[in-house]
Length: 365
View (cartoon, rainbow, N blue to C red):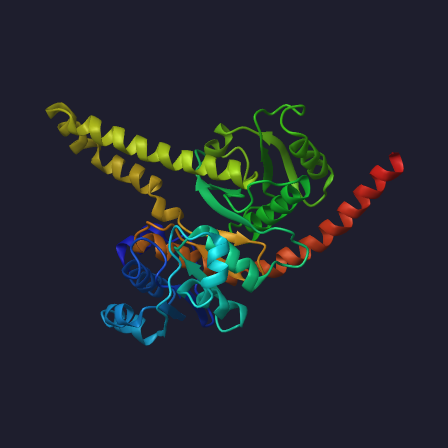
C-alpha cells in the first residue's frame, strides 16, 4: 500500500461488496488530475470499488490510462458542461443540469451509483443535491458536517458548516440527531456528547433560538446533551458533536483552518530565520513531521451532506490527491454503516418527541 495512503487511512475495514461511486471529475481547482489520482489511491485501499467519471473525456481518458487497475475499474461519461466556482446556486439549477456535477449526482438519484464526490462549487453542489436526491423523510434541511482533530486525540463532528445561514430551534435539533448518529455509527463513539455552540456556557446566554433548542435537547432521551459550549471548546474536544447554524459554523471552520496555516507558517519562519534555528529544525524534524501530519487538512478532507436521500461528499476544492482519496473513504465508510437507514429511524423518534413536547407546551399555556 502507498505510504501516503497508510498515513491518512482512517477506515480499518475491507469493502466486502462492490461499490460504485460517481465522481465529478471537473470539480475543484486541480481537476481532473487530482480526482483521477485520488481515485487511484482509494482503489489501493478498496480494490472492489468502481468509479463513474463525469467530465471531459479528452482530459480523463489519457489520465486514466496511466493507472491500469483504475482504468479497468472506471467508466467515463462525457460532458462539456462544468459548474464554475463563482456560479450562483440558482444559475446552476437553471443551466447546470448537464454539468459533470449534476450528472454525477443524478447517477446516485437513479441508483446507478451508491455515492457521489465533488470538489466543485459548494452552494451549487448542495442546491443540485437537494433537488435531485431530496431529503431523508423527517429532515427539513440537510447540513454540511465534517470531523476535526482535537487536543484529546480523537475527532469532533461539527455541523452545520455552511448549508443553512439561518436556522430555527427545530433545525438545530435535527442537526444534533444527525451528528450524534454520525458519531456513533461512523466514528464508533458510544453515547456521544452533543454541545450547542454559543457565546457562553450559561443557560441565559445566546439567542432565543439557541435557548429553545437547548430546552428540547435537554429533554430528548436519545441525545447525550452536554449543554452550551464556546469556540475554544471545539479544538479542546469538549464534546463529540458540535451543533451550530451554517453561518457560525462556516466562520468557525475557516478560522480554525487559518489558524492552523498561521502556526505552520510561524514554525517554518522560526526555524529558517537563523543558523541556530536551522540546527534546531534538524533535531526537531521527526517531531515536526508528526505535528504537520496531524494538522494536514488532507487527512480530514471530505465534508458530508447529512440529511439527503443519498450519500454526497464535498471535497475541498484545492485539496491534493491524498485529500480527495480521503473524501472517497468517507463515502465508503458511510455506505458500509448504513447511515441513511439509521437517520430515518431516529427522525421517526424525533417526530414523536417534538409532537409530545409541543402538546405539553400548549397544555401548560
